[in-house]
Image 1: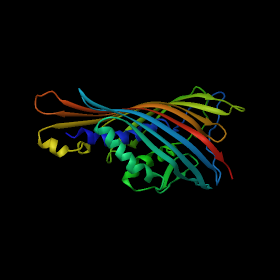
Image 2 (image 1 turned 180 degrees about the horizontal axis):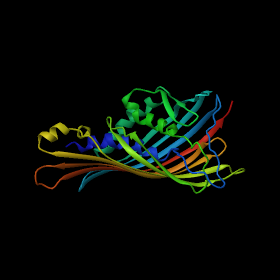
Image 3 (image 1 turned 90 degrees about the vertical axis):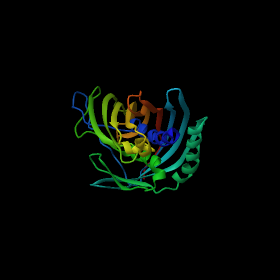
Image 4 (image 1 turned 180 degrees about the vertical axis):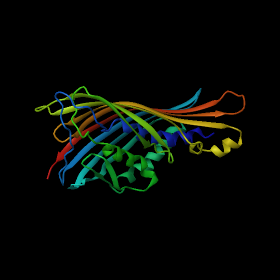
Length: 305
């Protein structure tokens, strides 16, 4: 089995999957003493610039034959409000900078390096992502690039605005709540059910005017067998394939209370793809690709019209 090929595809895809844990996500909570209504506020022509840094440690292989690599992805994103109407805000996102550094030895690191060299320069020239954010905070994609080679970079932009919505009623410091949804994981058409658990740690008035929310994310799904490279050949050899995908993560996100703008985020996540290859009564062979990632998002500047 060509495990290096699978490692290359899944490692970069899971780099983006792990970002779902480090970007802004909120849901509703019960009102209480000292509670406040949280609403996103946009102005036409408003522009925010964010820096994003993700460090990922990757291991892939079978017991006794594991390869290791390290990815450092750094980017800068422009988020501009095109228009504001009763239907919501229309926002355009594009990259100002995007680079990936690969460290490690062996075929997996070489393949990751070649992919970065090929794809990174194209990201700066890809079609901007345009979304519509409703007053309730739900996000609808208006325009997006269609190149499969830019999928990872596109998913980063989507995560920066996806589900960035706040409850219709007030929330108070100490509130705990949960929500779930399904999300594409960048491997074919596969999707994973995710559950988010929230804890509003801090909700301060002026002059601090900031709120801090902790997010815990869990998800697990069985992947379609056809997602495994060379699955037809392996099936012909008599192997029964059982691929699974698992994601866990935690993040702490700071928001500005006045307009609910994301100020910063720090996260840790682990994503694991495991393929059991079973044939007859022999012990199963297990190929595991695991990525441990840390992410930082920071608001660098904001300009208003």
